[in-house]
Length: 155
Image 1 (cartoon, rainbow, N blue to C red):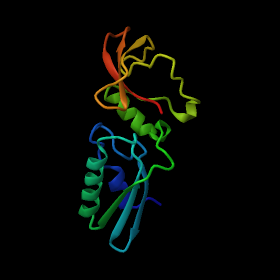
Image 2: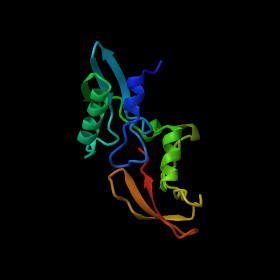
Image 3: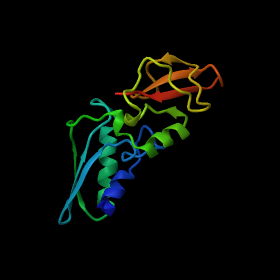
């Protein structure tokens, strides 16, 4: 059973992608309560992600606001994967104009195929830069609707 504190932690916004939460991204590994102490384990999306300290601070604030003493730990095993992004997270990324990677249920993510445009769903797209506004995104252009967009890199 998911606790109210677990729901609050999962609802913390990702600072680099504010339209999705750390729960949507699958970063929350566990939330354990012992008395008035809460221990939260998170896995960053990228080992060198510059947002980890902001995420730690935001999670600590959410835990404190719920009346618990926070302890936030970043764990690297098992490593985070784009397979951890929830269906809701994928839908939120698409709604924000960011192409999400394919879900694990779709089979292996094809890295050599053009990314589907989140605006018109065309695969007539091209990579314009392997690096977007953050390390986890790349820039693309859709040849069908002529809209630029970002994609979340599959790992």
